[in-house]
Every structure is written in C-alpha cells, then in structure tokens.
Image (cartoon, rainbow, N blue to C red; front, side):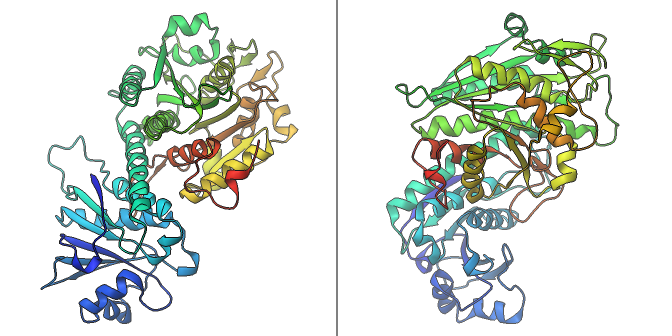
Length: 509
C-alpha cells in the first residue's frame, strides 16, 4: 500500500473513491459539507433516511456521476465531542477494507476539521489505519475469494498544515508497516515460522533499518546458564534461538530501554499437553516476540533519541522424548531454581532468563510482553491487556502513552499474596500458583527476576494479540499488539512524543 498526501480540495480530487467523515451529532461540516453540496444533498439524504447515523465505522457508498471522484464513501466517526485521533485509524482502515473488496484501487481520504488541533497525530493514525486495513490472511490461498484491491491511499491536507500531514503520514506508514509485519509473523504457521525462521526475519529487519543483532544459539545460551529457557526448548527438534536486537539512538546516554517478547513459535503445552481443540491457534504464542521485533523495525526507521534493546527468547514447547517433565527443577540465569509444576506455564520460563539477560546488558527500564495466561482472557476478555509492574510511576506513564494509540491496557496489582503463591517446597520458586489470579501469580513469578531498582512492566496480551472475528477495519487473527504502544513509549522516553495526551510526556520514572 502506498500512502500519499495532497493539498487538493476534496471536491477536486480525481480518484476511484473519496472518503469523507460524518459525526453522529450536529450538522455536516468540513469535507462532508462541501461534498454534500456538490452532490445536491446526497450525504444529508443518507443520514436523514437512517441508513447510517454516523456511528464509528458505519459506512454508506454513493456513486458520483459527473464528479472527478467516481464514488463517495461516507464513514461515521461517532460523537464529535468524543473524537480521538486514534479513531482515524479505524476510519481509514474501514474505508480501505470496504472499497478494497469492491475493486477500487485508488482512494482519497479527507480528514475531519478536528484534525487541525493535531494534524501530525491525525495523519499518522489515518496512514497507519489504511495500511493495517489492507492486511489479509489469505497468503497461503492460491485463489482467494476476495483480494484487497486498494494500492494507493491519498491523505488530503486541504485546510490543514500540509507539512504536518506529510510528517504524520510518514510516521503512520512506518507504524502501519510494523503492525502488519507483526501480524504476518504471527499468522505464519509453525512449520514455516520456526525459531530459526523468526531469527532470520529479525536479522533481515536489523540489516534493513541499520541496527545491530545478535542471535544466541543453544550452546551460547547454555554458556550464559539460561537453564530455564533451555528447559522449554529441550522437547523440540527445532533449535532454540535467543534473539537480541540493539538500537543506539543516544550513544552518549547510559539509559537503555529493554523490550522483551515471548517467542514460543508453537505451544503444545509440552508434557502437560493442551486439549486438541483450537490448538492450531498456538502458532500465535509468539505474538509478543513478533510485536517486539516489529517495533524495532519502526524504531530503526523513526530514529528516536533513545537506546533500545529487544530480546526475544524463541523456541517451541513440544512433548518430545527429552522434554521437561512436571516436577523437574531447572535453574535460571540468575541462579534461582524453579520447580516445573506445569510445562504449559512455559512462557514465564523463557521470559525469566530474558529478563536476566536484559539486566546483564545494562537495561535501566524493562517492558516484557507475552500471550501468557488464559486467566487474563477470563479477567479482561478481548477488550484490554493486563499490566503489572514494580514501579507505579512507570505503570502510570505507560498507560498514559499507550491509551491514545488505541491499544488498551489495564493496571492490575502485584500483592505479596501472589508472590507467596509462587513459593516452592523444594526450589526457590514454582512455575504456577494454580488457577486463582493466574495472570497475577505469573507476574509475581517474573518480578522475582528483576532487580527492585529497575522499573519493570509485564504486559499480558493473551486476549488482545489475536481476535476471532473480523471487524470493519481489520481482518480476523493477529492484531499487531503491542507495536503501537511500544513505539509511543519509545518516542515519549526519547522526548519526541507524537500521540501522547494528559501530560504523559512529562511523567518521569
């Protein structure tokens, strides 16, 4: 998908379809009002008829004879008083998906008058949404029933600062490409997306954007005493890969943000075998790692002034003859011993060594992300990801900078009770505390591998990394979470925020 910008007035654009926004309250304004006049009140008639009411992502198509644009797609943005720039990602994404399924190759997207208050962010979201909306899950189909026809989206800066719109469109293109990159990784079946393949993809990205990469093989991981990570890998015929990507955005600074992503490329549950129903979805268990690698693609392109290291421990969790057994005791990189109660609680076993390695590299802040617990889906459904951590200010800052991106995170507690639940009778820790508060006992386990002085967050994205149903603006399947939040956090910590609100950029940790 190519994203362009143009200063043309919406009514003069020659394109296959012109996309205009309407709100569910008030009179027509901005581009919608101008185009309604050119169409002799056709948009007002659609609204008056009740065909759509202007709710978010409601759609109505009008054919426009005698106009430079062949069609007008009217897209709802909800109540004008509740407008947020991130809504434009859904607005543009819904337009691309609707028109792309109707064989329209080129579209022009008009931004609402409200975009004047933050044209960079608004254009960024519109570009990101257009690219994200073009993503399809049919790459393995020889002859897909429906192909995405849209190849070019033009954002119209008429009435807005054209330089700001251009800046925003460039950023949104990078973020949108990164989101789709994470989705492609997660969508790829496990016979193609092995740990080796994921490491190769990360290497290609590192070379493309000019960042350093180091991939530790099993021998090097063993030399680092990563017994917990390797205990998960030992049941698989596929060799594990410990991926480390380093971006030096501020070489003069000692600050280093570590992004850590779970990279289980397929999770059978190991000896504690999962039920077979829907086990095919466990190819998505590397979504945290996919999002982390994809975020580094965006960071390498955007070049914020911040040092960032991404760490992805990648392996399969298989019930092979050498697999870890329930009751086995393994030793993590920091010397802590872990009694493996359930081999299906493997994500925390690979993450704990990654957290230790992040600190060895000098990380001053750490955020890890994983499709870690089914308990998180029970607690929050598919509406939000859970956040726990050891630093309230860092949690508050992360929630503030991620909220405007459209990704939702909900802070949850880490009481001492959850830490107590992870104590083993014969080792330092056990890897599961049972069914109660499973998301939080998992977080308490990870907390044991982070120095108390290092601000750390854990994001459980089990309910948000992939969705069962298609929406108006995106295909079903992987969502690209948490790429958007990671990019926004890095930009904010670098002092160059784009989408923050409510003073998030000023928060200090």
